[in-house]
Structures are given as structure tokens and as C-alpha cells.
Image 1 (spheres, rainbow, N blue to C red):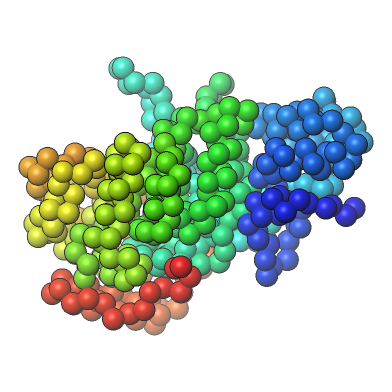
Image 2: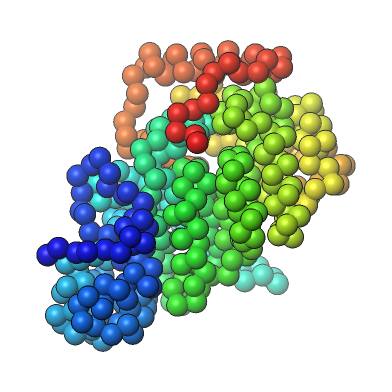
Length: 412
């Protein structure tokens, strides 16, 4: 059956199968209401069928259009022929922390894999239970942060809108089975990939997540992270969204951030923070800054003082996160007393700070770890060369030398 798609619908798929063999049908969750209504009109169906389909897509129990009892059988069959009910298959699901952390490895239609992590936070006095899902926006990542397993995998492609949303649908369906009536309470775009390098698809996904007819999650319960794509931050500022913007900072000194976050070679740290500061002023929303604490690398008093000077007086909050052990790097997490001392410098400067507890360490819950494990072990000489290079680069950075390496390919 030949399916003609409006241009808006074709764009929302994000070139999902470019260059690879796979199922050519678009994912139904990524189809906008107007595009779906247009498709239905072509098939002689009224517009209200679009609402019926969208409700079924998001109810968490239906696995195909032919299971939707409100649809005529012929229409349901046509829908299943034209669209994929889901663009992700849960290839592997592993649990940790007594079931409080759950990592899913999703296989896409072209065989690539991405990850999502579902974290449960039990109810406490004065606070309801929370269920936070961390999702991916790209297969792989072009930024290449050396302490991140996704960065080691390299960049494959952007995810389409449906591929982003179907991670959420998968987690919501699993959550509902585990706990009757339970709903996702928070979503963070902090999985594989750089969200602001796939901003159109991310914004479409956020719109769907916020839509009361779909997931219905309030914008302030959604966080979009970036490692510092300044044009993307400025574009968000112009749009004025109410979701939280998080900046993966990791270092306040350019020489060191050149190594830890290679796109710093294009958008230096002061420019990133200036863009984030303007975003906070325009939206009234506090910026969340993430710092992965790496022992002996970015956890010194000098680094703490540089960060305090950079953010003093801003509408900001800093999260200090012990580095997850990532294969093929020469580094380890900072000891907790060192992190606490670092936090003390920030508090003394009047900057709110939280020390985060790592979740799911025994299952590789950090970004890209499970996918990297399943991709196979690189050759030992390559690992040794990588470790030596990182040791040399970080040593030069600690002496204040800027990197001469080019901006990573794919950072635009």
C-alpha cells in the first residue's frame, strides 16, 4: 500500500531510517494531529478518528490499531499497514537498586540501539512518590565527552519524534503494570545524544508530552539538557518554554572544559553561561548546571572557585555528580569528602548546590553504558592509546593549555 504523507509528517520522522534498511512506516506517536487528520480524510474518515487513535496510542495497553475496538476493522487494518504502533522494541531491560532503577535498551527499526532509564523515588513525608524517566534524543553522540560511554560510541543519527516518544510510552506501559495507576512524574532529556543538536524533534516531543490528550505532563516536570549548544539555547530563549534547561558544564575553566566537553572549543564556557543566564532572565526559570566530579581533574579548590565566580548572582542551581566508572578512561569518581568540600565553596558564594547519588551503577545506568557493553570491547591497543591521550590532554589542561584539537565532527 502506498502512503502519501504531508510534508509536516515526513519532517517529524527526522530521517529516521536514512542510510539503513528498516521498516519505512512512520511511527504513529510522532504524527501530528493535523497530519493524521489529513491522512484520514484521504481514506474517507472523519477527523474525530484522529483523537480515537491518539488516545489509544497513549493508553499504554494497546499494541496495534486492530486492538482499538472503537475503530472500524478496515480502517484499523489500514492504519497498521501505514504506520508503526511503536518505533522501539525493548531489546533488554535490567534492574538495580532493589528495583528502584530500571534501564531499557531499545532497538530501533534500523537495528541501532538507544537507552532510557526509569528511576523510582518512594513517597516520603510531605512528598509523593516520583517516577523519573531519562530518555535519549540521538543514537550515539557527536560531542564526544571522554567520561561518557555514549561519546565513545560516536554519532549515528538523530532520532525521529516517534522514536523519542516511544521510549516514554514503553516506560509508562511498564510502570502501569508494576503499579496500578502509576504515572511518570518527570522526564529528562539526559540520555544518549545532545538534545539541542536535534532540537526540532525534541520540541515536537516536548509538545506531545505536554499535551493533555497524550501524556499530559506539565512543562515544569520536563528537563532538557545541553552540553552547551549556544544557538540552541538562544532559540529556546526566543520561544520562552517553561521546561527546565540543564547545562552539562563539568568545568568552569576553558582549558579543562576543552577536554571534558569538546564542543567548548566552539562555544567557550563564558559564552555558554551568558546564553543560559539570558535564558533564565527571559523565562524566570532557574538553570540547572551539571558537574560530573572526576578525581584529581575538575574537583580542586581552584575549579570550585572558578565555578563560583562564573555563576555568582545567577538564577542557578548546581548538581555535583560523582563520575560513573566508564571503561577505557583513566579517571575515577572524586571521593565524597572532596565533593563535599567543593560544594562548600559554592554554598559560601551563595550558589545552591546538591550532591547527587548515582543510581544503577551495577547495571551501567549511566548514559550509553549498556549500549557500549553490548557493542563489544574495543581492541586493547586502542584502549591504551585512548587512556594515554586523555591523561596527556588533561595534564596539559590543568596547566592552563587550551586544546588544539578541532571541534568534533557533527557539532553544528
